[in-house]
Amino acid sequence: MDLNFAVLIDGDNIPSAYVKEMMEEIAKYGNPTIKRIYGDWTNPRLGKWKNVLLENAITPIQQYGYTAGKNATDSAMIIDAMDILYSGKVSGFCLVSSDSDFTRLATRLREAGMQVFGIGEKKTPNPFIVACDKFIYIEILKGQSEEGDSADTARSKTASKSSIDKITSKEIKWISNTIEDVADDDGWAFLGDVGGLLQKKQPNFDARNYGFQKLTPLISSISNFEVERREDSKGRKKLIYVKIRENQRQRSKK
Image (tube, rainbow, N blue to C red):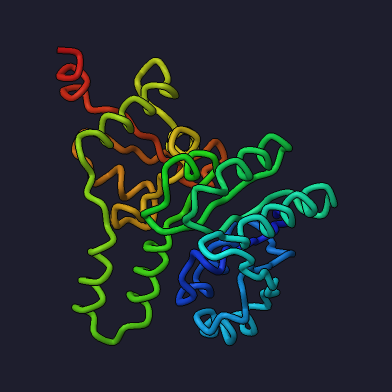
């Protein structure tokens, strides 16, 4: 059963160019029944949002900037989030912002049993990221959009690579530890369990950060790991299992 989501967007702190991609991403996890964006719509700087809001049925919420240098949008978004929480109409929230001021809100919503997804730029402070169940970088969606729409393949690939992180020994060690956490006595771990635990440990973990659409090709690209495909008991689908190669296991113990 899909989750009913409230999507709350900080219009002062997020670019408008990839809202369509954001909404498509959110739809993978649930049904966005409430869609609101907050900002001072008397400010010409937000004028570029107009067509985007109409195309995606997002309701603009007016919030005047009462004091220079203070962001009144944050307060309005937080108050609305709590009103929606107590209405009982949704089972999850998607907070779209790169602002750490929403860290306490994300924590409070999760304390109330809500699923909380965050979407923001890579500059988003870590406290807000780890306060969410899952955090998705806009740069990932930006890269996918450029790959799908650009007629110039070479230019598209260059733009996409600029937002791709490299897999370092730190990430490999982290994945190895997670495999060991859920592995059976023979060292094999069901990849679905590995992915779930990786997400719990680090909400912004996403294979797309490293240039892979799914976890399986990401793991397969790392020589430290061995991947095995098995049929389920009914022979209807393949189950993916992963194991740390023996030579790598022995090396890590030295």
